[in-house]
Length: 385
Image (cartoon, rainbow, N blue to C red; front, side, top):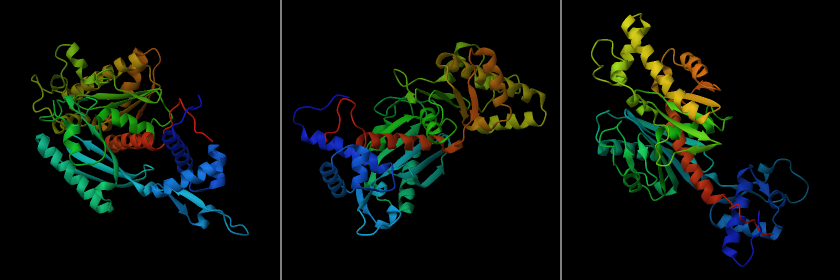
């Protein structure tokens, strides 16, 4: 790390504040001496930074008893990071429901909410339902809207950097929707929009089945599967945000659409929705031969889609989520076929977060944004003592 030179006191203060905040956030509370030891800053610098953070509402003096064993004489003042100084939202927009999760600045969940929404709902209706979920959640938690520091959103489709849905076939009126701009009207803080499979991948790496794996693929398995991937612990979006759209692979072959694969007659399955597909799987479990063949075709297609991604990325782990993850017989065929097609088969596991994965990952995106704003220190400079 190079040492900062020249006069830039505002930058120095910001760097020192980030260093002290990071140290306080890593512990329940700390004295000025402890902060000085951890950060390597001088005591006068630490004293000045802490006072400034108290004025900003990000740090508060902690009661003496929070520090543990009492000693003779006046106990040293202790300070703690105020995780309650701000709040974050993670939002999910899905075909059948919208959901929200609320946390403090430490990512501790304070409440959740969800509402069903018709699959045929317009974009306006779907967003109105989402706003209703958010308003109800904030009211129940007693959190003012102005306390929000960032909002993360997980949505189906290929999402541009500005939050516009470039292509979204899963929801009516979704292609071309300026989703980020529409939601920004409801919040005074940054709104970060990401593809739902990508947010689910982030969630599994944060709190789910991929906590120990920095190279992983999350498969959002459904009628048109999507995938999110982390490479070296970082989300891989691709050049235009379309990485992981394995649901389009059936276009490479004839007669390989979900409607054909899941048909138990000589005609394509109509309607093609999750209720109709669930009925096919139920019939298969009950011994219906044609339904069993349809299920086998569906699983085989999913296996081939995932294998293509595994061959390209060589992940350590594949996590399967989405509604299809609960279907009988998905994991073992997937493991077997990956072993057959891939040079180095990855581990395969089911999602630990289930339907909460997308909103949880969206919350993590909001938390990442705030952490970068409050705690990040540029690698080209160091805090000055």
